[in-house]
Amino acid sequence: MDRLKAMRVFVEVAERGSLSHAADSLDMSRAMVSRYLAELEEWAGARLLHRTTRKLSLTSAGSEMLPRCRQMLALEDEIQAAVTAPEAAPRGILRLTCSVWLGQSYLARAVADYVKRYPATAVDMQLLNRSVNLVEEGIDLAIRITNDLDPNLIARKLGLCRSVVCASPGYLQQHGTPQRAEQLALHNCLTYSYFGKSLWAFSRDGQPVSVPVGGNVSANETAALLEAARQGVGITMQPLQAAAPLLDTGELVAVLGDYQPRDMGIYAVYASRRHMPATLRTMLDFLAESFAGDAMWQES
Image (cartoon, helix red, strand yellow):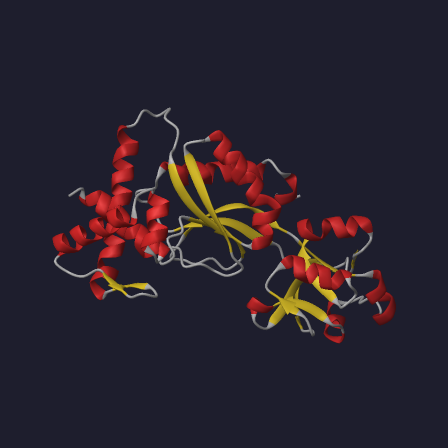
């Protein structure tokens, strides 16, 4: 039995949650996937998966074995990279996650450029407005907009995300334009539902200012909140890069110009520097180069 191949099959099944999906991903038959799993279980001396008609789940032995199989496969990739000529291009799949807005507005274009440069690679993009557990969900790289990094992960800063507070001219005409950040408490503020209680943070003349806000519309996606603001529902704080087209047309108007919303860092986050595959290393360098070459993501 090719144990490394069997481990790769096991990891793929565990991540996909289905023998059929794993077979499609690995370009092999479902019967072959089952055979590799059976041989791996025989070698391990334990059942690795609970199989029902509805779903697959890991046994306790499978949960113990899964991270070790990932380590073995990462070591295999590292050995292959070490003996491959330095000029050889990276190959294989990279699983990447980011928010819906960042993925649609920027990362999709950057990923397209990356796979053009490295045609032996493939990128699986997961656009999700939630924080992903990289290890449990089999994600190689997350691009996060945050000022609160997980100390257990490795982070490489790519750039800055600036924000703007804005509303439609119609809303401001009807409800008035706030002149001070504290006045936001009197307005209908459109917020991100997954942030919990919303506290908008600013600086003014070098001093921090935080204002609790709320309203009758919340969402977990930037475009929805911008559209609600465009329709005159309320005031929202959004990434400047996302709001810029509506600001340019006058459909939204920036307010509180004396207050600077707190900048957020944009980070490439991954689990470990050990056994880093060439796809991850080159993607990190590629994104750092891409963000550095675009002034809108850098400090002014």
